[in-house]
Amino acid sequence: MAEHEPVIAPDQRKPGHRRSGRIGAIGVAIALVLMQFCNNEVTGVERIWLNGIAAALVLAVIGDAVLRRNGLRS
Image 1 (cartoon, helix red, strand yellow):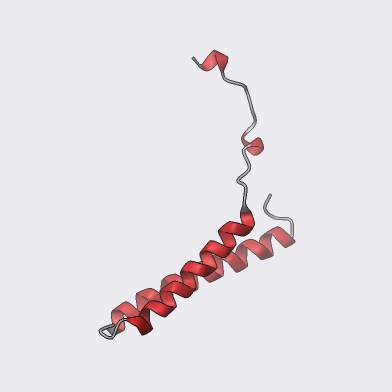
Image 2: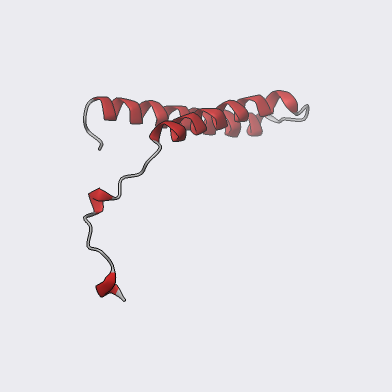
């Protein structure tokens, strides 16, 4: 079965739709922050988790943009 598959290099399988991934990550981060205001029983631990995950998503998007601008990622 493997003999019929085309041979391609790993760098040819580049992920597509980078912009929609960034928009999705920012959208999820906004949704996580807004979840605090929609629920009236959010505890301190829940706020830490919601804000922490939202901050991690935003930092990942910013880090990806900086690395791509500097040419360190393909």
